Length: 99
Image 1 (cartoon, helix red, strand yellow):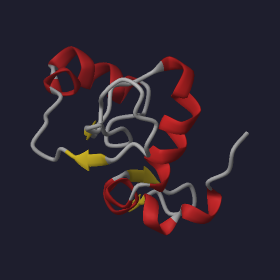
Image 2 (cartoon, rainbow, N blue to C red):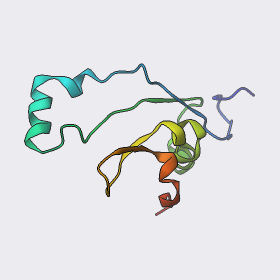
Image 3 (spheres, rainbow, N blue to C red):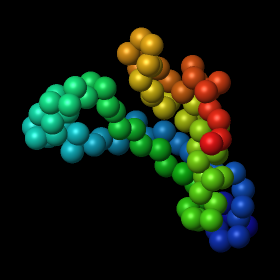
């Protein structure tokens, strides 16, 4: 059975899509509101693709696989609370926990 087919319960794999842009974040109206809320420069959108059909009943697996995937760990940007700098998830993996 190929990945993504019904009945396949393997681990989800993710790929970073750096070429994906989110034009809605750079419209004048959005920029103005982000500035008003002191969020301009403090929010960023990133895209990742995945290799299987999303199944609602596997949502917990999906989320855990996402945060454990090497492509996500090395590319997902987080805003550091202490420094205010953008860091990758790889620097913050000790904070990942299931709640």
